[in-house]
Amino acid sequence: RGVGAGAAVCAFLVSLYYNVVIAWTLYYLGRTAGSLFMGGDLPWTALGSDGRGECPESTLIVRAEAANSPFLIDAVTGLFNKTHAADFWCPEHGVPDLTVSPPAGYVHISTRPRTCPGEAALHFWHSEALQQSSGMDELGGIHLGMFAAYTAAWLLVYFCVFNGIRTSGKVVYVTATLPYVALVVFFFRAVTLPNAGQGVHFFLTPDLSHLLNGKVWMRAVTQIFYSLGVAFGSLTAFASYGSKHNNFPRDATTVSFINCGTSIFAGFVVFPILGYLAHELSEVNPCIRDDDLSGLSSVGLSGTGLAFVAFPIAIAHMPGGFFWALLFFVMLLCLGIDSEFATVESFITVLTDAGIGSALRRPVLAGVVCLVSYLLGLIFVTRGGIYWFDLFDTYSCAIAPFFVAAIECIGLLWTNPSTWDSFRQRTAEWTGVQLGKTCYVNWKFVCPALLIAMIALSLETWDMMGARESKPFPEGQGYLPEWSIWAGWVLALLPILTAIQFLFLRVPADLAKSGADADGRDVADAKPACAVQGASTSDAADVERDSECSAEAVASTGACVQEFGEA
Image (cartoon, rainbow, N blue to C red; front, side, top):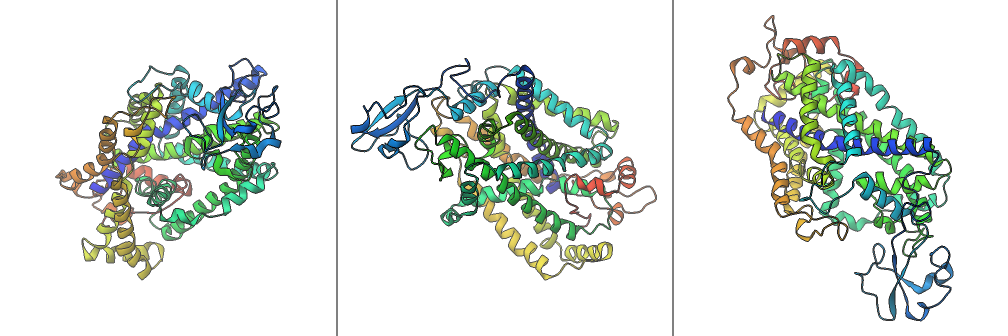
C-alpha cells in the first residue's frame, strides 16, 4: 500500500507542473498561427528591423591594437568582420560579457547588431511567453495569455480522461503515432541543412570525462525513469486494464528498446538542427563556432531552452518556417498531452481502486481531479511561475521514484521468501515465461544497490537550484529565496512520507480483503493488483477492466508491466 501511495503522490505532483509545458506549447502554437494569418513573420524571428525593439548591445573582447579599426565591425549590420576573427578572444564556455575580465592585451568593445536571432528568441521567451518577474518571491500577477493556454490544456486533458480508458485508449492512437511521423519528416529536413554534419559529429563523439560526474548519472537515470514511467504508478494502473495473460516480460523488454531507439533516432533529428543553429549564430558572434556546438549554451541546449528557444531560432531561419514551426509545436503537443493524460489517468485509477470518490460517476470524478489540479497549478502561470515550475521539476521527484522502485524490489525479494516463488509461478502460469536467475540477481542485488546509490547522490546536494547564489532577473537567472530550498525538500519528501504513513496505516476490513469479488473469487487471482497495493478493486472498476481488456488499453503507457497482489 505504501509504495503505491508514494508513487501516486509523485505522479500527482508531476501532473501539476507538467501541464504547464502543454500550455507553453499551445501559446507558441497560437502565436505562430496568429502571425501566419496576419501575414507577418514568426514572432520570435528578430529584433531591431521590425519595430519590436532594438537588439541589445553585444559585448566582445578584442585585441587592443584592432579595437579601433574601422573594418572590425560592419557599420551597417553591426556584425563582426570575419576576416578579423583571429583578433577576438573568447572564454572557455559561452560568450563574453562585461563580467568576464579580458586577458592582457585585450579590451572590451560594445556593438549593437541590426539582427540578433538568439537574443530575439530569448527575449520572446522571457518577456512575452513568460513575462518573467525578478524572482520567486515576486509572483507579479497572472499572465493572461498563458492563463488562456493553461485553461485550454486542462480542458484537453479532461476530454482525454473523462470516460476512462474508453477515451484515453483511443486518443493514444493519434498522440503516440503522430510524433513519429513528425520526427521522420524533421529527420529528412534536418540532415539536408547546412552544417548538419557537425551536429551529428557532436552527437556521436563522447566526452568520457563526464562519466565521472555524478550529476550526469543522476540526470540519465531520472530521464529513463520519466520516459519509461518507472515507479510513477502509471504502468501498474494501465496494466490493470489488460489481460493477465499478456506476455509482460516480452512487452517490457520491447518497449525499453523502442524507447531508447526512439531517443537515439531523435538525436539524429535534434543535433543536425543544432548544427545548423550554430552555423547561423556564428555569423552573429565570433565566440559561437559552427564546428563546436558547446557555444550554444548561451541560448540553451536542454529542457525548456531547447524546445522554446534553440529550436524556434533554427526553425525561423529554415525556408518555409511557418510549416516547420507548426509541425514542431503540434509534435510537442502530442508528446506532452500523451504523457500528461497518462499520468492523470493513473492517479484517477488509484483513487477509484482505493474506493475514494466511489459515489461519483467517472466523468465527475475526472472533472474534480482536473479542477483541483487546475486550481493548484495556477501559480505556474503567474509572472513568477517559471521559478515554481523549476522548483517542482527539480525537487518533486528527486528521490521518490528511486525510493519507490527500491522498495518494490525489496518487497518482492527480501521481505517474504514465498513472494518471489509465487511471482515466478504466476508469471509462468499466465504468460508461459520462466523468470530465471538473471532477473533474480538483478532485482535482488543489482537494482536495489544502484537505486540506493541514486538516493545517496540525490541527498548529496542540499541546494539543488543554487538559491544561495541566485540573482534577480535579468541580472541573473532569477532570485530564489532561502525558503525555496526548504519548500523543495518538502516536495521531495512528501511522496516518501506518504508511503511510510500508509505502511503503518490500519486498513479498513473491506479494503483488507484485497478485492474479493461478488462471487468470493480473489481478484488478485484473476487480474493484476491496482496501483495502491492492498487496495480493493471496486465492482465498477472490475466491469470496466473486463470490458476494456484490449491492446489499446495498455498502449497508453507503451508497456504492460504488471504487479500482482501477492507481490
